Amino acid sequence: MAARAAWLHFVGGLTQSEVAKRLSVPNTRAHRYIARAQNEGLVRVFVDIESVDCVALETRLMAAYGLSACRVAMEALETGPLPLRALSTVGADYLMQVLASGAHEVIGIGHGRTIAASVDAMGRTPSEGARFVSMLGGLTRSYAANPYDVIHNLARKTNAEAYLMPAPLFANSAEDKRVMLAQSGLAATMELIAEASLVIVGIGNVDHTAGSASAAALDGPDAIDELRRMGAAAEILGQFLTVDGAPLPAASDEKVMAPALETMRGREVVAIAGGLVKFEAIRAALRSGLLSGLIVDEATARRLVEEL
Image 1 (cartoon, helix red, strand yellow):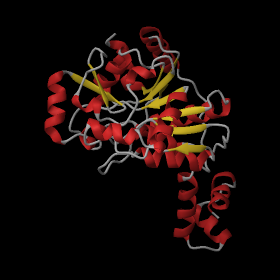
Image 2 (cartoon, one colour; image 1 turned 180 degrees about the vertical axis):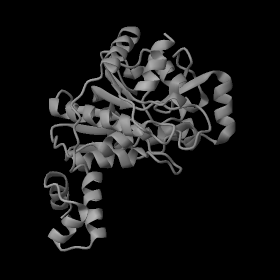
Image 3 (tube, helix red, strand yellow; image 1 turned 60 degrees about the horizontal axis):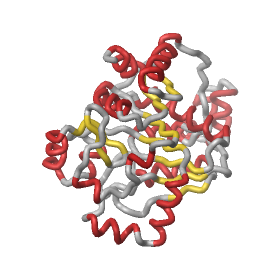
Image 4 (cartoon, one colour; image 1 turned 90 degrees about the vertical axis):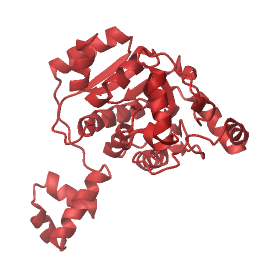
């Protein structure tokens, strides 16, 4: 019914009230059907345009940071600090193209609101030949982009095999981490992570921003303040980088349930991140040399180029 309502509305050109009459349902139900079809990726809107300005920004960023791929999302009206609408549209298109290419048998998925929004924006993309695996444990506190939800959504939209890491983002201690990694289920997940030829990551701030990975998973504000004093500027897979992109050793490294960042070198690592509030973090990630690709919004890309 949702698909039929969406077809009548978007293809047939009927108003929502006309859709309701055609389907013999109340107007409110027709509205819910159409909204559900959009939320589940049954409706795709294509704007066939290429911005010369965005292409120029992409070219500059690729040359400056040795990227093999870069996509700059054109500006859109956004209400929050993160340009989720623009990033999710481009991110979803990238993910669907990757799956259609069949170039990667195992794809690692990180965390973050931009990744979650990109997966939400994807249309149904059957890809039974690919396998997805969470690159890190699920968070132990409430968080808007829980890796479990993201990987489940990917599996639902692609019909592909998807594997979770059944663990928190941070173990209570280094010994607890060793014990958990010795379990057969976690060991198998880590082996699959090692096979991932493409890894999609988010880039986190190291601050007290609501919803940031650092604020949600670390042991209170004191830990975050200490990381900032140590020079932390960015977080990827629960690990930290300085403003110059150097790995920042932290006590939490021995407890994080994720592969070490250095094991990402030699693979395709694509970050989906944006927003001027994350400028410092994104620049640090680019300077690290870990990234082979970046999907970013136009305003942030412009500032990155201006400050080269």
